[in-house]
Image (tube, rainbow, N blue to C red):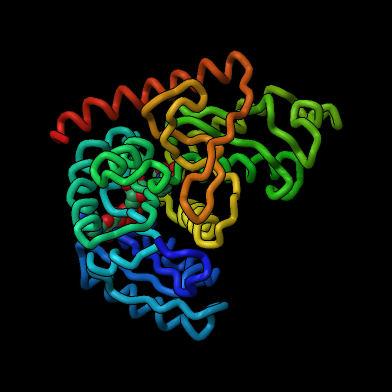
Length: 322
Ligand SMILES: NC(=O)C1=CN([C@@H]2O[C@H](COP(=O)(O)OP(=O)(O)OC[C@H]3O[C@@H](n4cnc5c(N)ncnc54)[C@H](O)[C@@H]3O)[C@@H](O)[C@H]2O)C=CC1
Ligand SMILES: CC(=O)C(=O)O
């Protein structure tokens, strides 16, 4: 793997659909990587996107070299980000996508590994926790080099919703969603803070704030994707910016805490599952998992989320004969 002293960073994006191209656009606008190769089954559409993105180069904060990629480009990539595969149709859950996307992933990961890839996988395709774990299995890479977007987007949604409620910048809200990126996720209210004040204490500042409102705020977060998909068919800007945030944390060796989908090996007394938990991300990928104390209810919901994911992953990986 390249060190942070080696100047040119390369990201290869696989899957230039709504999520993938929004990620590419956000990467360019934030000047996060010097090189960006885009691979998609629909090479013609991907070439159109490459041309379109390059036309904005003159206005970007720094120069990103964008081209229509091939799997050989993965050999020198720092990050391969996979956004390829089916997305949810109205009424479908993320977990409903597992069979078709697992098949697509098996082929993609084989092609990436055949290139001699030696970087970090960043996964967005749903069900993201299950597919992140599948990439660890398919690639044979150490788990710290395979990261899923996990609940980074859900955590950003929670910070936005709480910011609106308290009339504060989301940047001052320190509250996490953990667990499955999906229906069994949970908020960690017991350790959330606003500035440095515990969120549950902050509620006492005004009679207009009510603890019960937190339930509605969480439901808005958990069900946000269903509502957006109902209205416009897909979600892509929020996830694109979440992916850029993780990419930046890796390439800049930040040691930032993000709720990525991370493979647990004993942390939280859980083994062998990828799930959204606060994780220190640096140039090597996963540096360390942060174990946040949970109250009894949070612990019970987290255990349920772990069991749900294991119940999906294990039969799915067996069905694909790994
Ligand atoms: N993790 C998260 O928080 C989020 C995840 N997603 C997920 O991201 C995924 C992509 O969603 P969209 O971009 O909306 O879908 P999309 O249908 O717009 O794009 C998918 C792209 O993948 C390409 N593709 C399919 N098979 C391929 C292969 N074998 N090799 C290369 N390219 C291939 C297609 O040609 C298409 O361009 C979905 O699974 C969706 O559920 C979406 C939003 C948030
Ligand atoms: C689609 C999806 O996973 C989301 O927007 O959360």
